[in-house]
Figure 1 (cartoon, protein in one colour):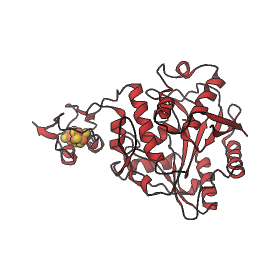
Figure 2: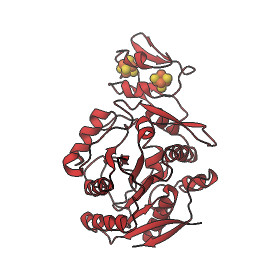
Figure 3: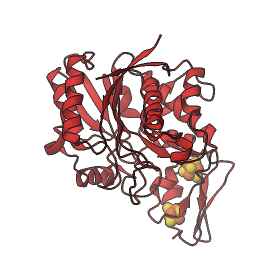
Length: 355
Ligand code: SF4
Ligand code: SF4
């Protein structure tokens, strides 16, 4: 059986307010949020973008969704998780402040921001899954406490996953820091001696007592390290480095298993929206100059996280007249979709309903 994917086709550079109105009309006409019950605590997961020029989902889409959710009796809020790497979004304080500068606050969206993984990204919940790599995955704790989930993703190329959209937003974006670490690499963090001040904060927080101070510099005992990333998050001097080089296939499979874990918490109570405009070669975490790699495609909506990504990928390639590896990075990029099929997670066979 095919999964319905609704497609709002955009002409290139179509205005967001017009697309947003059409999205609202679609959601209401098809009652796509009909699963929201009175007082449902509803997490609206998005990505606030790294800079104003990049192609993240603009606040007006979130505002509209918040209004529709509230109209259904739901209690929606915006949510995100901290990044592993150092930057504007590596803890809740910086991340929320950054979201405000990107235009996401209560005044513009009507929803508060509540970080799903706590102040430092370490508040988590272990979700049991029937995966091939994991029997349980570390998901940001807050997702276990909500009644419904709406995921608003922006489609981009990605240097390791091939592309990033709903599955990536679920698998990586909803994981706790430990979950992210597990996906990114099997390697362990290293200390950059030149940057280490010997403050000892990492050693204090290391849950495995894997860090000692030797001659006023931190040293990690690799055999004890579990790769939780606590030291990476706690070091204020950027002295903890990490090898992000998991294989492409490995990373994509891990992303899918984590996405499966998140979705298992919301059976029949989730909706997935892909904004397929302002498509760049790199993901929205990359703050460098934004350049479009193909004309805008539009917006895709589905109750199935795999179908919505499969449709977005097909439409991007159709619009560009090129395969994704020609548009972005020359790496295997359909692993995410094929692996989801192996796990019986979602359905990449979709029925495209153009509205
Ligand atoms: S927290 Fe950073 S600077 Fe302090 S000891 Fe650890 S690695 Fe060195
Ligand atoms: S990754 Fe975790 S276990 Fe490994 S050294 Fe850092 S804090 Fe300790």
